[in-house]
Amino acid sequence: MWRLFGVFSIILVSILTSKVNGEPLVPCYFIFGDSLSDAGNNNDLKTMATANYLPYGIDYLINGRPTGRFTNGRTIVDVIAEHLKFEDTISPFSIAKDQHIIKGVNYASGSAGIRPETGELLGDRVSLGKQLENHETIISKLGSLMNNSVGQHLESCLYTINMGSNDYLNNYFVREHYNSSRQYKTRQFSEQLIAEYSSQITTLYKNGARKMAVFGLGKVGCTLGEIVRFRPKTLCVDSINSAVTLFNNRLETLLHSLNKKLPGSKFSFINMQAIEVGPQQGITVFDKPCCILREDFQCKESSYSSTPCSDRSTHYFWDGFHPTEAVNRVTGAAVFQALTHIL
Image 1 (spheres, one colour):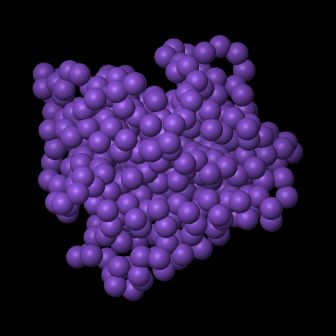
Image 2 (tube, one colour):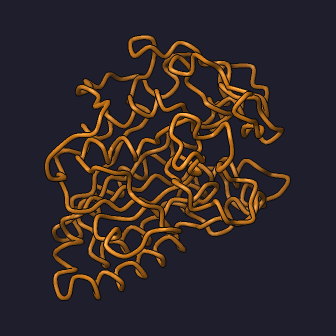
């Protein structure tokens, strides 16, 4: 079970556990994604997909309050920002302003997907298409802050995109609410997703992105929420993992093709299933969440006196879907190592 998200070895660099000094490795970092990357963009939306309440953020409070991250502490992209030598985390779009946007913006939104309807069952969210629109708004603001140097600035930035999980977990495999599984066979759905994703990635390129790390999907059929929901006879929901594999294979091929097609592009596929997380990093608990769950597998709201599991550094899952900070630190370090060639 400890090989949930990988079967191949990756040699990890030493994990940074404190802030680092010096200039960042890139001038700016733009983040697109879902709840695995959300830093608070869903806080004021009408949705069940929020995490701005305890016990979320119990190990990373700002002004004594949870930030809206779907974990106990920092996310994968927060760890990447540390390795990039940013002194602070990248601000979410919902509060980003003034000079802060020069170093980048986090547009990620919990329950969002590549397809616009993905996640609507939970309420409002910022789809990838809308995140791209928000990025164009930021580019316009950068124009007034940086005069004529915006294009060169953006081409030097790092972009990460972690999208697609919800298109399966909160769309295709929720047959009682969405008709996508009746409209498309599994292979056809992956083709439709990749076609739309290709257009979105190309839009980012047209708006200046050159250094882009695109995350493949992990074995989301092995999340606690899906295992409880589908009650598979095997360890994981194999039908979901098979569908995700089709998507990942097509995504890797797409990025290879775009690198040949788009001059100056450095698009990198991040194989999330190749990252081992297990006892060698101190992670030993894979079958229990760290918090008490609601029916939708998010944490129930609690108070400071109701502390979640005290050994959360050993747990893989924080709630029914999202990893703990301990896992995010291992994964973030591995992702950083995998993308250094495009910096």
